[in-house]
Amino acid sequence: MSDPVTLPSQTSVADHAASPIAAEPPLQRIAVVGGGTAGWMAALMLANSACANRLQVTVIESPQVGTIGVGEGSTPFLRRFFEELGIEEAEWMPACHATYKNGITFDKWSTRPGFESYFHPFASMLDNLTMTQFINNVHARLNHADVHAHPDRFFIATRLAREGLAPKPVRSFPFDVWHGYHFDATLLGAFLHKKALERGVRHVPRHVNEVTQKENGDIASLQLEGGGTLAADFFIDCSGFASLLIGKTLKTPFVPYAENLFNDAAVALATPLDGPIMSQTISTALRHGWAWKIPLTNRYGNGYVYSTAYCSADHAETELRTHLGALDADVPARHLKMRVGRVTESWNRNCLAVGLSQGFIEPLEATTLLFVQRTLNMFVATLEKGDLSTQARANFNQTVNAQFEGTRDYIVTHYKTNTRTDTDYWRANAANTHLSNPLKQLLATWLSSRPIIPGLQKGLFGQGYPTLSWYSLLAGMGLFPDPRDMRPPTPEEAQHDLRQIDNLLERSAMNYPDQRDLLQRIPLKSSEPSLQVYLW
Image (cartoon, rainbow, N blue to C red; front, top):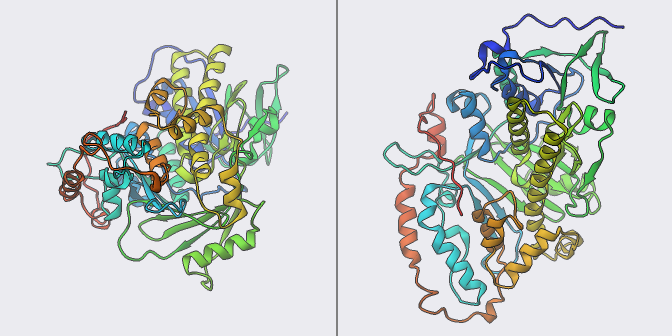
């Protein structure tokens, strides 16, 4: 048998644990297989857990396997990750060329007049002053009243994104926006790597040649290239689409989403940054998928997510370059294959899959790191309780799977409600009937002019996204009765003066700085406490 791997001498995780517990944790040695953003996030969250004083965390990262490093956007939950670790924006954002994100513009997904584009905003406490008016107008328009119900007029994040403003108000203005970020994914992984080592996580830069299992099927150890064995009590699979542990070793079944989501490939390239630094992601529908545009402090990240059943890789690259005006530019493009779906059990035996090994729902709403965080938060909470029973594992997997299904339904809705007819791709998406029963129920409720809020609140459908998101999507795509069938509103339906909302948002926006100006102030002045907002 090979000798055990000699690990580098480092400060122990115990020295950095924020809130240690006296009881012996059920696990002492955890091996994280794979680095990248997911692997180092996993290591840091374990090192920050209440069990960290008795926990040895080791990241095994192959120098032969690169990370995908293309995803460059997040949801607002990434903010919580850094806050819980005590890492300031002033430290990590400049290191990763990061910018603020107020939400996502969806352009050219709909051809309905007046609804060709809409913005999916992140929430703010200020929205509580305008949410009721938006919901009321949506319900009135569903009942054929000719009132304004496009979401772009009702929320502060939309206005900030339109004007290139950062979601960090001056200190005298109390309405924070629960924002996300754009960042260089490769630099973020490197930054998290550095912080993990500082907090006592061990690093073994070796390639895994073989995985050995115990008689009962659990993973026992990793055989490393060049000789040596690394044993652990528990293993976290962050090996990406290779799915080395959860898939290849434990043979965990994979549930594809190909019937629901057609896209299975992407091409990405960078372009120079010019003009103001916008504070939003832009998703533009193209002929066989959609293109993203993400602003960093030093460049734009661009890409095209498409279906190989309708478009070749060469055609996709040409279409993206044409879209960007970079057809003849000497800029390399990177082509990627995507495995869209999830494993049946993210936690199988003594292995937890995190990141792309666990599953992937295309990057339309930037949910990849959200799933990393959610999965690890639940696992750390379970570990801190000391309950690694079969029932705890079953409950865990049921919750994770429900989150995947709910997010999938929200993404599918973008495609199902499109009205483009220019290609077979868009026509097939609109005609797709392979929808989950909860999504069918949600759409049927909306199209029958009944409020979907009761179903959302009871968890009957729409899990994973709040009312603000669902109403912004369905109203933003113009999913209303035919304009020719509209009637004048009743006095009650016309009760809201939108000029007052315009005035409120215009005056409020004056309290937020230009994004470029704010980011150029190093260190960043952003010490206000964050507000987590759930609207309705």
